[in-house]
Image 1 (cartoon, one colour):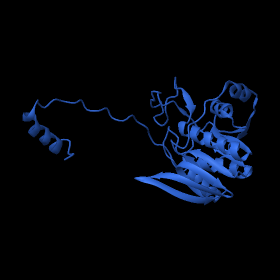
Image 2 (image 1 turned 90 degrees about the vertical axis):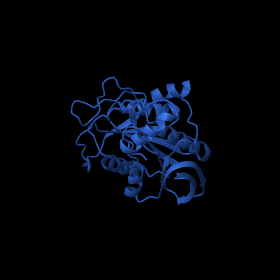
Image 3 (image 1 turned 90 degrees about the horizontal axis):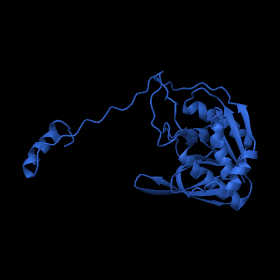
Image 4 (image 1 turned 30 degrees about the vertical axis):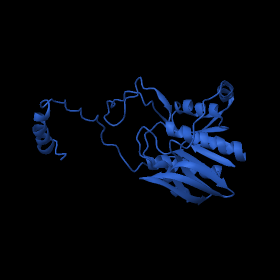
Length: 248
């Protein structure tokens, strides 16, 4: 079984993100980057599938040289090969998906995995776009996966419950938290990753369809205020919630 897992290089969840001087991108100064957390669940599931059914797992990413750090992390977890589509310019989800889809088509995998979303822009679009571009079935936010012959039975999260669906392989999946518990890279895996080459090629040029006009920080929260104490404060509190906050 040949598997491709697409991974992204994103700001650490604890990073203090600021808008850059151009007003359209983030300021990368002193920002620590990590492997997208949802992609860790995707990698782990791919490794488990390889251990059960054989084959190989290929990690694929699109970005600049700094993305190699994330691909090394994937290799240290047990991924067999890594591909980097090099492009330093900003792309929207469509342009990223088109470049990934073109490369995935060449690799002809049985399964393509993504994290359910990248925590930088939270668009949750690339995985399903890739599936559409390749003409493949897709199942998103999955929390359980079983393979039976050429069919996958998956359980996915929906509003208020879970949904079980069946899809024919090859197919595209996106991993939700709870699908598994990602492994930590072992010392042996870290050392082995240093010797594994990362294959590079220029990312195919694709015109973005979305242009970022501006970015800004969210407005600060208004300071709280005390309207009184005890039961006597209730009428004033209700009035403010109704007339100022307009929540009741």
